[in-house]
Amino acid sequence: MVAFGVHALVWTGALDRAALAHAVDRTRAAGYDVLEIPLLDPFAFDLAAAREVLERHPLRVTASLGLSAATDISGEGPAARDAGERLLLAAVDVIAELGGAHLVGVIYGALAKHARAATVTGRAGGIGVLRRVADHAHGRGVTLGLEIVNRYETNVVNTARQGLAYLDEIDRPNVVLHLDTYHMNIEEPDMMTPVLEAGPRLGYVHIGESHRGYLGSGTVDFGAFYRALAAIGYDGHVVFESFSSAVVDPVLSNALAVWRNLWNDSDDLARHALATMRAGMRAVESVQMH
Ligand code: MN
Image (spheres, rainbow, N blue to C red):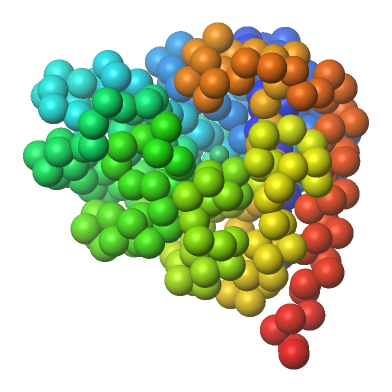
């Protein structure tokens, strides 16, 4: 069974105790199974507060992040590579301590518009880091999801096919492909082929509209995407992601170029998204019988 989740930035741009309690409460009230927590700075994350909130209101959690220039493991600088490795190891520990099993996102390089492609040595350095982080994560029961994002947000890989080749190079069983419909809509030839090519190596899914607002108000061909998920029997997490200038994280919102307001009512947005995703997946459940 697919587990439906929602990104915390639908509810709040902060991660203090009150913000986490609000996000957990609203996620549960909207009917989701999973809350994805942005863990851009795992060292600043209040683990004790998060534990307490989740003890009071149990909810499955995952963590996502994008590295920065200072922690770019696929860049040229050894200092950033080392800092990135420390950050990823810390993020694995945080999500493991919260009982989560997934650390996903742009965890293989800086989430930013780059002036040039990653170099051979930068890429190789990043792969070395990811192998060590994956081995640590394996011991803690955590899977790493490499989110394939568009050319303006990474210079390492931009398509599912590139991502699968990258996974082959990393060669660790607990590193999987993470696809996001918003990015696929920019870079992929269509919404089915990447899913069918990934098959069992697809381990995490983000659902986002072409402008990252209300599902159904943009140009993403969700029907084709859901059909492909059904065809491979995908039963992992399906997490709704949406960003508006109504709810802002000072770092993440800028990295994602969230400059305008696409919604104001988080509850309505989240409920609508869950109903839409459920209906879309329900409609194609039977394709394996055809
Ligand atoms: Mn995403």
